[in-house]
Structure formats: structure tokens, C-alpha cells
Image (cartoon, rainbow, N blue to C red; front, side, top):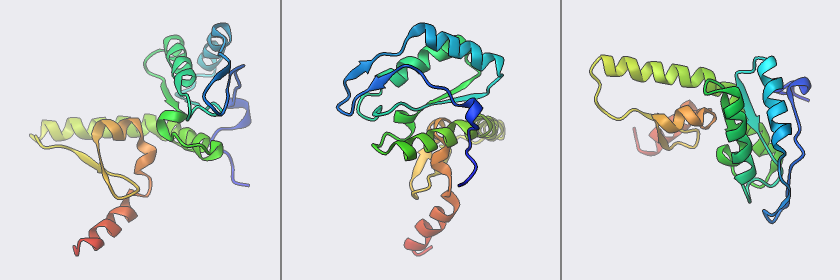
Length: 166
């Protein structure tokens, strides 16, 4: 088995459950979320990935926990929600994608924002677009929020160019 991006001691659970139809069986507990925020602060984490079962059908609980954690952790901590990053029914794919996004987002956002600042300082006034892994384009803001969508963009760009006779 490949090594997990998130080691077991850095994976945490909350008493929360959304059913497959999107109904809430158990809402997250504020005291539990606040205790988790304190624990994450003590661990000096830089990023948090949130993934709840069935959140693709009702992302409200992930959003709530993200807001509450953000209030407890502060604005400098990256928080990614699985339903926002990869809102699909398959939990493994959604969870691993949100973890990868949270893993690369602090570094990628600093890099992309520095690139934008430097281009602006050099007088660039156009739109800075990024190639997605599927061959499409995205804005700088979307690339900063969802850098995992840029993975494999180089090979995708080559294929996209080849289809246009470039």
C-alpha cells in the first residue's frame, strides 16, 4: 500500500453523520470542534482537510465545521472541504483529493500569489490563467483555492495543443 499523505496520528474524527440522502443523523458538536481546533493548534498544523461521509449530498456540515475551525485556528491555516474540492459520491477519491489539495495549497498559494505580484510589478495587465489537469483553464483565484486540479496539467496541455494542430 502507498504511504498515506496524512499519517494516522494526524487523522481525527468528529461525532457527525450525514445520511446518503443528505439528511443529518448527527450534527457536529461545537465543544468537540473547539477541542479539535485546540489540538490542531498545539500540533502547529498548516492545513486541514475535512471529509465527511455523504457530504456530496449535503455539504452544510463540512461548511459549518470549516467555519468553526477557521475561527479557532485563525486565517493563516488552510482549510479544505471534500465536497467543495471534489463533490463526488466516492469517499476514497473525495477524501484523498481533499487531503492532496490541503497538502499542496499552502505552498502553491504562496507561489501563485508571488507570481501574480511579480507579474503585476512588471506591468502585466492581462488575465493570468492556469491549465487544469483536464486540459481546460482556470483563474488564478480558483488555482489558489484548488491547486490539486492543476496536477498533470503539463501533459494535459500538450494533448490539448496537439488536438488544435499546434
